[in-house]
Amino acid sequence: MEVTGPAQQAAWRERTVPGVERVRPGLWSVPVPLAGPLRWVNAYVLELAGGGLGLVDTGWDADDSWAALCAGLSGIGAGVADVRGVLVTHMHFDHVGLAARVREASGAWIAMHPADARGLASLTGRAPELSTETEVAFLVGLGAPEADARADAGTPEQRAQWHRLARPDRLLEDGDRADLPGWSLRAVHTPGHTAGHLCFADEDTGLFFAGDHVLPRISPNISTHAGGLADPLREYLVSLEAVGAREPAEVLPGHEWRFRGLGARTRELRAHHERRLAELLAAVREHPGSTPWDLAAHLTWSRPWSEYARRMRIFAVTETDAHLRLLASRGLVTGDGGAVPTWTAATLR
Image (cartoon, rainbow, N blue to C red; front, side, top):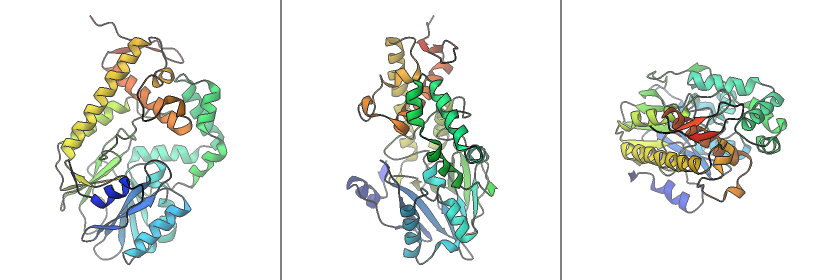
């Protein structure tokens, strides 16, 4: 891998946020601040033939994020009113969050994959109380004590903010060309991180807008959730191998920094998950009859398990569940089929 965004990498190391950067003629990277360990989202601004701008992702729906996006556009001599269209790589809040404000300020269309459009409709169309109870029930079904599940899932009042998220005006399937004049961006469906995750490959420049599918430093969270993909890690690894066959001129990820060497990075990520699967299988063998909630506590994380709570603990447990499902599909573990399934290593013949 070759780092092509050294200013972004330097900002990461210095625990700051990088400045707006001109990536190519007519293309800029605007860092939009984000609370939490990822620190910012890369919103990409594309100058359109005939006037106006396109965006790839927008950032989190917060006032300081909105201010940063507006300031970034102002810094390149433009404004939010110039935006004509927004391509959303996936439905997570840090990527779609500001799309509603952009559309309100500019009249821009918003496009995403149909699977994520359905997921977003489920989130925004469901009463916060029902949404909370659905997640609590899902976590209890993974082995969480109900009190812990409720503490981690949060309150209906916290979930009410989801109703501000914008549903798309347009849908993009795999291979569809985005309506951004002057660019030849085609959608590449890469399920795993979400069911409808999209990357965008520009046929003229060789640029690859990777969203969260491939990041240069970390592995994106691959998790199960209520109503989601049955085997999200399998889908992720398949789509990871598919994009790894490409060798774009440059990879523009949703977080961290730009790089070259997509094939090498996808091999690293696939190897990471194989190591993770082996660690989990060893934990199942050592603790037979355990739930995903139990097993997550026996795995290696970036900090002590006792420090995990709320969304971080949910991500860890649901990621563990995704790895269990792939082990099961490979015939290496078996579940007992109960309402709260427990897992045991399969007997190999």
